[in-house]
Image (cartoon, rainbow, N blue to C red; front, side, top):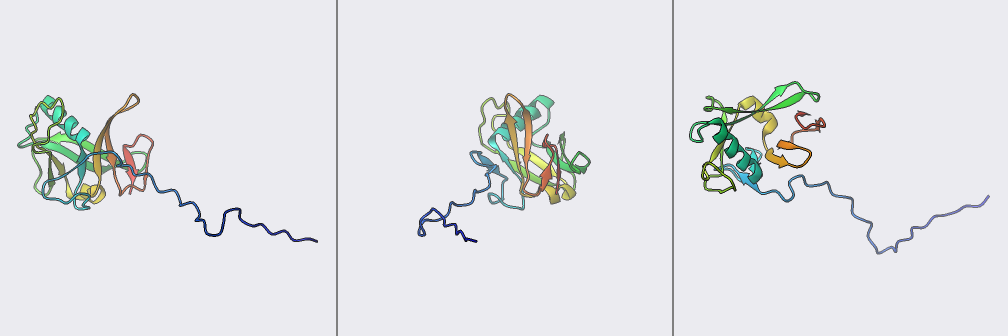
Length: 165
């Protein structure tokens, strides 16, 4: 019976290849932080310049006043992963909503509001699931729509409209 030993082929002073880093889902995006908050703060939500432009265009089209109204983000039970994102316009914030103001003076091409700020409303219960997330707008040949980049999501469905926290 003979014994065989296997030796590594790399020199002893060479380092092993670094483990692959997780892909940064925010790479290449211009993030806008709400007024009064620090960038990447867990105490808020952020949006991209693409989302800002699309929110402004949609608000103008729907006749929603930037001074009073805004975009309501929420979470509700349901969907194939347990929780679903909700997005709609609202004429004013509710009493306990967190209100985030974005984009005052930030120009976006084709902007019908002339750089008016937009407001996002998030109710306290939904904020538990949305704190620290980024709202993006994706426009590709295959898909067009808002994209929730949520660090609180542990699993999501293929369409991206429902998740598990």
